Image 1 (cartoon, rainbow, N blue to C red):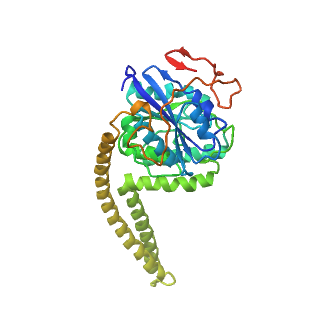
Image 2 (cartoon, one colour):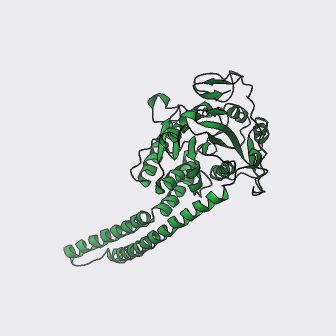
Image 3 (tube, rainbow, N blue to C red):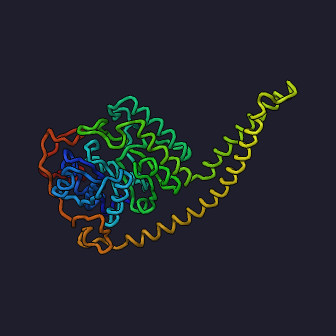
Length: 380
């Protein structure tokens, strides 16, 4: 994919009760820039109880509404589906709370346009000048999560695996196969790394703390860890089953050998196993369990090969399903559009009237009400 192509970009914004910022965020999304001929916005209203959906429509975005709150991961999956139905060549995902600057979208997608990457994520910690102000415990949690995900994907070097400002090529979006409903951020890395998608990160300036309300994902570190760790564990189980079950088998084997060795040493020293006789049974049970789990690891590895073949078939089926271009640029006109996700037909986004004290954060300048072109970027 080269920057000379005239590509269609769709910005997906999952939102829950973001009426204070959603219109301003949409208004600052570029309508075109070098290498991208058109930009559309899809807002996934994940069961909002305020005017998020109405304000997004007024700002000119397509709106997909969930009847109830399903979680960020489910909203992301719905947004990817909507973007592909709109014929997106590149999909950008960002939050609707104003923490990310829409003016940075060209910088985010540049590695896709110029270097052929399939996935690009914003990093808040890759450049010391851009590190945002945030609670120390959250920064520590991000480091721990990075180390875990980098280990799972085998020697990764990513500095931020939790940021929601990301870009995907069409082919990468078609190959995504995610299951987590609470979040999708870490699972995306593991899934795409297992499919050998080229990935990179771009340092960008991000607001560290929301201006309005609280994050529905990371407002509580312990809840975030409790919800996220099972998603990472299941993703590792699915993509690296031999390693996942092999580690469990090795742990049980070493535990059994440790107990058996201790009792053996005690018997050699005293001529009896008491008072540690029970450890003989427990150690033997651990070794037997390790053998069973090791056998399970081999079976899971075999099933993992079947899974990879099935995912390739699923990707081919998705390419056939999404091959038809949208009618009149809208989702509602598509005969195969799911009835449970009502989406408005395409509407042109007019430049949003903004103020210098707009609630959406902007990096270095206040927005101007008229559109202008600077360095190949058409903005508001």
